[in-house]
Image (tube, each protein chain N blue to C red):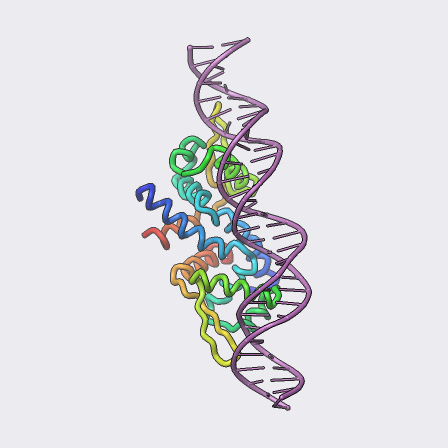
Length: 97
Length: 97
DNA sequence: ATCCTATATTACAATTCTATAATATAATTT
DNA sequence: AAATTATATTATAGAATTGTAATATAGGAT
């Protein structure tokens, strides 16, 4: 791969890595690999305040890593980026098997 | 996996992800998957100052992600953590194929 | 209409990260 | 020993991230 392209890729990918570079955001993402979850369900499973959960979800949504589906008073989040799913699954294989 | 163990794993893995969550550190790691390189070689390939290169290498070394071998005036760095190599290679497959 | 539940937003202090400049050290060459 | 080369260290200003508290909104239940 040529140097400029490699720089570009590293830039792109490392910014996705920032999303993962936090214990609770990684936890959220790991849960979401199972399929979509609403905010309350994720709050039960992650040790994190409601405010921070909402901020993290919002952040990853802005970055197009997650998508939302609103249903009444609930918000269901899921992973929007195919490569991110693959990556988290690779990580699970490497670190959790 | 039980919740506490999962928290622990996420903590451990996300702190490794912080190393990757920077364009130039990712670049360094990508080059090091090919094998050990000295600082000058990496400086040629990464758009980064000498000082920052040294700081980044030092940081990843402290975090046990890299190891060093000194030979005369040169320092040869390589990836110390087997899982990190696997991870970077997975990332290369997912994002660069 | 009022209350409750689920989620989002705003504000902010504390901490951490980044980039850069300047200087230091240690090995090598002249 | 002086100069050069390769790498490391220190200092620091600015930027970004984190965690928390307080408040807001919007749908559903009473």
